[in-house]
Amino acid sequence: MTTAVTKAKATTKKVAGKKQHVFIFFNCNDNKDAHSMNARYNNEVFADTTSGRKALLAKVEAEVVAGRVNIADKDAVEHDILKGDPTEASSKIQYGDIERMIFMA
Image 1 (cartoon, rainbow, N blue to C red):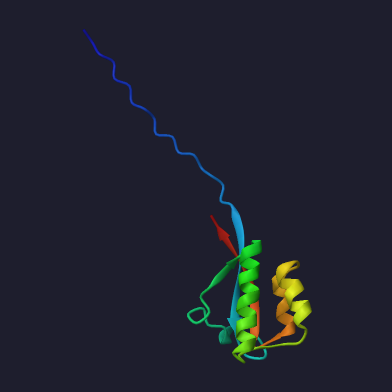
Image 2: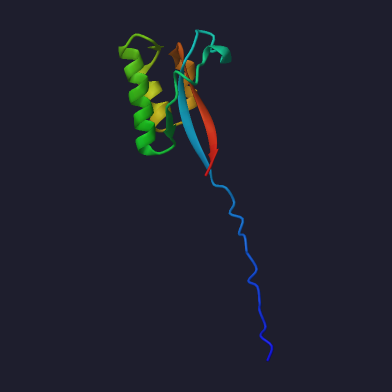
């Protein structure tokens, strides 16, 4: 009697990476030069969610209170971060910059 052995084929399913936007706040010089932004110092990322944007705004406000950054128009910065494009708030922040990064999850 002969026994047939069948091998199961390993199936791999490729899942397309889901792009997620996150934001990072950098302390920097007045010109916002890339070399003045230190990822070892500013190493918090903020998700593009309602709570993430609120946390980003709280970070910017804390930097203002600490005297490390200045903002030209508080209401406009708040609007850009909470309802618009947070990177646009950078033009209203002196000694600070908000960058968008893409993560693949």
